[in-house]
Length: 201
Image 1: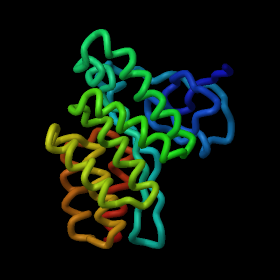
Image 2: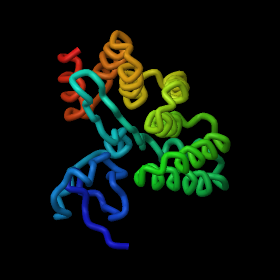
Image 3: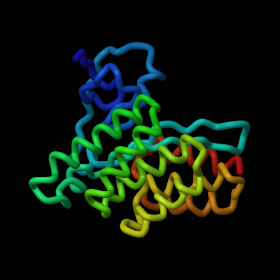
Image 4: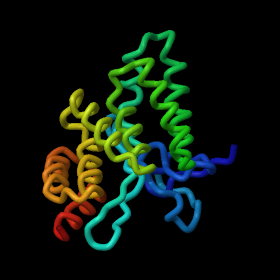
């Protein structure tokens, strides 16, 4: 399988994927596959979330699909050692389908992973992002709230609660969720995008 490097973080890139599994960089927005100098990052940084995209419709609507890949090592560790490889393969299959925008298939994989371990907030966020991508905003909202019940400071869940709120026209809630997101977020580029969107609201 041909690989290059992600132009943003330098992680190995699998050509068939549209998004970097480490930092979430959208390969479709790069003009070349030239290797980038890898960023130095801590283990905690590698566990940070990714956000697939923020698409501004008009001046008020943000459409975001998330594949949050936060803390998969930590998530997998919650399963038994025997089940962990199976769980990991199910989650990775979900990521693969999500990268290819095959959201219905990704949903099945993420649901299967949660049936194996129901306490995986990162998988809940990925599942919610898939539901949002197919227009099932109530189901997306439910999954993001499940993740926040486990981790109230989950940045991707907070961000996407704002996205869902804005999508359904609840600007006040979107502002509240994004304000909470800015309190815990570390991705400067994404934070700047949120600040700019808040300035338009």
